[in-house]
Each structure stands twice: as structure tokens, then as C-alpha cells.
Image 1 (spheres, each protein chain N blue to C red):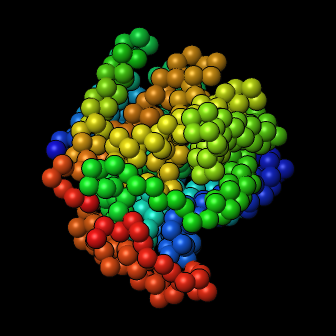
Image 2 (image 1 turned 90 degrees about the vertical axis):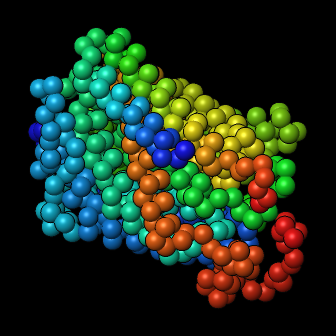
Length: 428
Length: 59
């Protein structure tokens, strides 16, 4: 594949600046996850986020970018039916082939490092209160070093998904500038695998298999995390759109669409919970807000603001019902709502980008991308985490879970001045 | 049951890929890709069932 057109100097600087604020998305998610967990695991939740980001950055630098690559660089291609199918990048390890000179490839390497960290952070939401620190870091290494770069190559590295338009006439190929698929859905499916492998928290389901409410310990953390994530997402979507969505991208439109998606999703969640329960639910509104951000990433550079509002409304409505459905019907214990927000919100964003596109058959390209997430990424990430669990058990011991991960794994609590009290939810 | 579910997911993906590579018209591609997605839904359903708690279990 030929190289995409180079960015202008102004666009490169804007892209770099946008990436500098992108880590706010990770900070926001870390605080949201900490707030939605129990107080006795709060320090563990934030430390896990820091260490997972670190492991992901190292794994991506060591192996990830060599698998992801960038359009126009060396990669492994198979010919099928007379068409090239670009499967995996073949860059040197440890960023050795990248000259960090504001070239698109170097900006893509930096973007990929942040994106890999964000994807690896998402499963911490579903594994909260019971996932060992070492296991979370090991799982993050697998995700950031192997699964994320492979899918990112197909979407952003000139891979076969991106080429569906050129080779098979499916619109403009798979469209995802900001990472609804490569970051959010990949991380969300990893979160589902982790929730399944770890099993529910002790006391989450009673003897009739009905869920017991375990509210988050700090709603202020959760809601402030949403605002922080909004700043980060604006940078993430702008940088991603500049790098991967073509030279005609208008950054102000990207930021406007990101914001409209988030606010409409939060308003939808607030309206639905107000109608159903009599009062708006803070944690579901926060989940709705983040789901709006997640869904915005795919199409933020290509749709009108009114369409972004529709995508946001859909994401907010989806997440409210998905959280309840997963908890009550499928017995998936996901304290942070990571599966509903990131996996389902991401897939909705991908599909919406196709539905609202004017290009012929764009929806089919998006649909094939979703089929790839479910049919390839989910089995791969599940199998890797299952194997890891065989080698290094991922769930903390029952004693550790009861004591709290702060004391059990770190030796000190997040709130030492507060006296801990008996856990009424514990099954005796 | 989990292994069967994972193979169903993979099979659905391969059907979707084959639809893109082998079919000529957009309608045929869409039909076969939807069929592949249907197989994937079966796989997800089986994987969900494999992780549901059994009635004799006590959490």
C-alpha cells in the first residue's frame, strides 16, 4: 500500500498537542473505576491503572508497533482471490524503524502507545475488587503487545480491514478514526473475558442467583472522572482523526461531535433512569457519558453534529439496558460497566459510522469489522487470559478479597483514617 | 462447551471473510456476512451459557 499524504506542519503540531492531552482519558477512566469499586480497594485500583499503563507502554514499544506498523511500511501480505490481504506489520522491534521527527509514522507510534495503554486499562473496570495486581499487568502486556497491535494494524496500519474499500468496493474501507474498535471494543471484549474468567465478586449473587447491589464508594470520583475523560477523548479523537481519517479532517468538528455525543448519551441515561426509577442514577449517567465518548470515536470526523447527537442518544440508551441485562440475565459481574460501555458502546459507534455514511456499502465494511471483533478478537483474548490464568491465577484469594486488595496486596489502605466496618454482603 | 463456543466464533468470522472475498454482488456479500454474524451470535450465546452459575452451585 502507498503511504498516506503527509500532514502539514500545523496539522502535525496540532496532532502532537492533542496526543499530549489524550492521557486525561486514561486518568478519567482510572478515577471512574476507583470510584465504582469498594473503598478498601481504592488505592489498588489507581495503582493498577498506573502500572498497567506502564506495562502497556513497554510492551507496545518492544513488540506492539512492529506488529501494528503504518501504511506504506513493510508488512506481511497474503494474496487471496487476486487481492492483497495485509495481515500484520513487520517493523523492527523497539521503535527502531521510527525517526521521531513529526512524521505521520512517528505520530502514529506515539498515538499507538497511548491507545494501547487505554485499551489495557479498560479491563480493570470489570475485574475490580478481585483481580490481582501482577495478573492485571501480565494481561495488559498480552493485550498491548499482541492483540491491540494486530487489530490496530488491520484498521490503522493499512491492513485488510482498511483496504476493504479499495479491494472490494465496501465504502471507504473500515472507518474508525478515533478508536471505537481498536481501543474501546478490543478493551471491552478483554474486559468481558476477564469478568468471565475471574467470576463474580464474593457476595454479588445470593443463593437464588439474584444480584446484590454493591454501590461504588465515591460518586464524586466517578463524575469528576467523566469530565477528565472528556478532555482526554477530545485529544484522542482529534489526533486519531488527523492521523487516520484523511487530510480533509476539520478538528473543530471532531471536538464538537465528541462533546455532543457524550452529553446526549448522559442525558439519555439520565432520562431513562429518571423515567424507570424515579430519580436519575449517577453511576449509570456516568456510564452513559463515557459510552457517548466511546461511540463518538469512530465517526467524529465524518458526521454532522445532529448525527453525533443521535449516536450519543443511542449509546446512552444502550448502556442503561446493557448494564442491567449483563448483571441480571447473564450474571456477568462488571463493577465498572466496562463491557457495556466499551464493548457495546464501541460496536454501536462502529456500526453507526457505517449507517450514517453516504458511501455505498460502508455499513458492510463496518459490519465485517464487528464480526472480526467478535469472531477473532474475543476468542483470542479469552484464550490468552485463560492460559494466563492456568499459569498465574488471576483472582485474589477469598481472604484477600474479604480483607480488601489495599491491605492484602499493598499493605496499606487508601483511607487509613477511616475505620473499616463489617461487610454485610459477605456470605457466611 | 467453551471450546465449541470459541470455534463457533471463529467459524462465523471465517464465513464473514469468505463472503467478502468470494461473493461478487453486494447483496450476496451482505447475506453471507449476516449468516456469519448469526453463527457468531450462537457462539456468544454458548459462551454465556458456559459461564452461567449452575443451580446446584452456591456463590
